[in-house]
Length: 240
Ligand SMILES: [Zn+2]
Image (cartoon, rainbow, N blue to C red; front, side, top):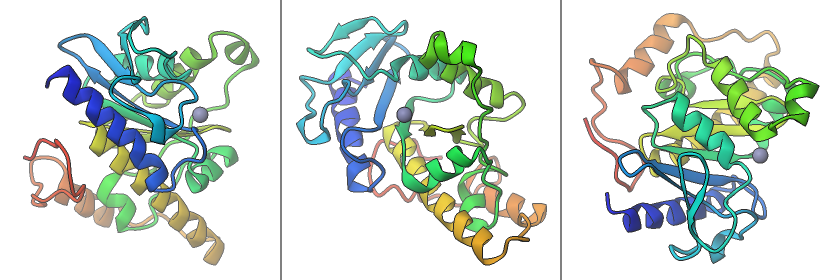
């Protein structure tokens, strides 16, 4: 993809966040990687979404050194860098403090799979990281935030579980392009909302049976997938 097209996609994807009510003010960001060119395109820090353009979006190298753009990149850039390096299959990352997902993050709880909406997109629970230590918080905070996510994904396929809750903080999702990553954030917020209501209505509720979870997930993922249509409604998603 042409770098200008990637910049355009990142600008538009960032603007999707307030549209879907996933962010207030300038909280949250979308970043994408061009692995061939070795660059990351990400929202500048503190920039209101409606002022984002291809001219002011930030472009950095894979160490976070600014290559293009008049402003500093998002302070969360080091988290994106850690995740892009640890998860080579992902091409885009979304970070939000969307309300319901953040409630689970603040409670320090994984979101159990209570239904097929969840099972369609996330295989089993959506994990929450451990609390960071004082040393990590006082150290290279953003890098360490990335590291606790990677630590939580030991033994978990990031493509089967395309998102995480960072304890006491918020949500990160990722995908094969910016639209995929935004889509996963919208879905995560809905799942978090449904799961909260589900536990309120039935505090003893259990996860759905493995058979139902497996069936729903495998309709859309893996070699037996038969859901050919995506439901992004747009984008540059590689179809199977
Ligand atoms: Zn944050």
